[in-house]
Amino acid sequence: MKPIWIVDDDQSIRFVLEKALLRENLPTRSFTNARDVLLALESSSEEDGPQILVSDIRMPGGSGLELLEKIKAKHPGLPVIIMTAFSDLDSAVSAFQGGAFEYLPKPFDLTKAVELIRRAVEESQREEVAEERLGVTPEMLGQAPAMQDVFRAIGRLSPSNVTVLITGESGSGKELVARALHKHSPRANGPFVAINTAAIPKDLLESELFGHERGAFTGAQTMRRGRFEQAEGGTLFLDEIGDMPFDLQTRLLRVLSDGHFYRVGGHSAVKAHVRVIAATHQDLEQRVKEGVFREDLFHRLNVIRLRLPALRERKEDVPMLTRHFLLQSAQQLGVEPKRISDRALAWLANFNFPGNVRQLENMCHWLTVMAPAQVVEPKDLPPEVGVKLDAGAEPGRESAPVEVSTELASSKTASSSPERMTSIEQNAPASPASPASQEMGWEAGLAAEAETLLESGRHDVWDELTRRVESRLILAALASTRGRRIEAAQKLGIGRNTITRKIQELGLE
Image 1 (tube, rainbow, N blue to C red):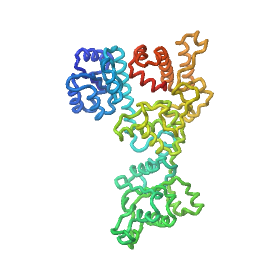
Image 2 (cartoon, one colour; image 1 turned 45 degrees about the vertical axis):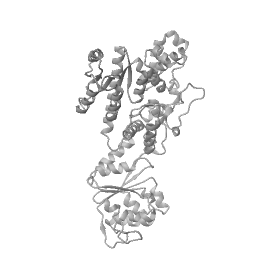
Image 3 (cartoon, rainbow, N blue to C red; image 1 turned 90 degrees about the horizontal axis):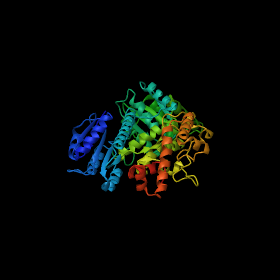
Image 4 (cartoon, rainbow, N blue to C red; image 1 turned 45 degrees about the horizontal axis):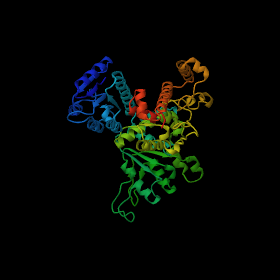
């Protein structure tokens, strides 16, 4: 395991943390100033770098906040815990907003400090596993049965140069399938050229596909190679083939039949060594019946047909795709990746996504920019998801759909009956206990509720009950302090930043 790096100019602090962490079998490495940490980071490899960084704010030669800023610029995924005296609380809150995992006020309780560091280690390891999973799935994500059928088909077609027709709704990822077919084909070293036949005006599409000779029409100052020639030795992807003009369909049919074509204004046949993959969201058989698509071209294209399922047909893939797109968006924008709660994932998994995977990807871009906290909750989701608050409900309590597992949920789980869920509150603390449960004592009542949830087949019992207990504790503390958060945090024995974050995560605003 990689070590926890401790940065503090106070030798006693370093000594105490080192001994406490070593007792927990957590290796450490200590520094007295920020400059040495930055030098060590530059010279360390991925294997011997830090798992967690614990740093003081006030140190000679550079503050902990400056160190945090520099580390987040180069190592955005490294959890940083800031140690601070009570007089530096405002700075600590700024540090949290700047990407710190948590702050640890001095003097600190050693047991709580170790617990916080261990929680940061677990979070770091979860993120590493998630990134590793994403890293080994380069082109497409999906473990739903329908997507596994697609992957198997790509594998069977990999040694072939056969023409493929990909069908599926807009935004379902047809070009990704085409790229995967190319990448795993004998033509992988050749170019992959894509053209959307519906996006180019009819008058220009012929020249785009086949090129033109100099002087072929007004403005043709030089000879131009078309997409067929650009894709020589590789793959040409014709997207939205169902919208191709009828007269151009004849020219395409000739190329597919004998492998030759003529540039616009040309008199010499050009040989095409190209594999054609076509895609459409339309029903080509119906287009043939309507007389707007050539039947002979349809049969030429329809050698192998691959149907790509809509996202609503593989809802168990929504959690995996969401995390992937959130990480991808954060990398593109150079910010800390957002995490998403199980409740928010439940809402997304119950949304039909008319725009399919592309809509989910755009939604994750929106969340990366617009979600106010690092953990995305149902209230942070875009309006089109349809999260609504119950009239008269506690603040932040939404009328949630049936929850689905964030792992590979079966369709049975996703369609659990409402009757089965009536005793399970989705987002708010449990209702007051009945007289019978009060007589049993709260521990017995908790055990009974845990047993009920476990027997219901849920896979988030720990999170659900922890959420309820934390909500009850915080609401009780706020009631006793008349809403004063700092005083409530002190009564509970937690940090101000912690109670603020918990209020947001639990929807208690």
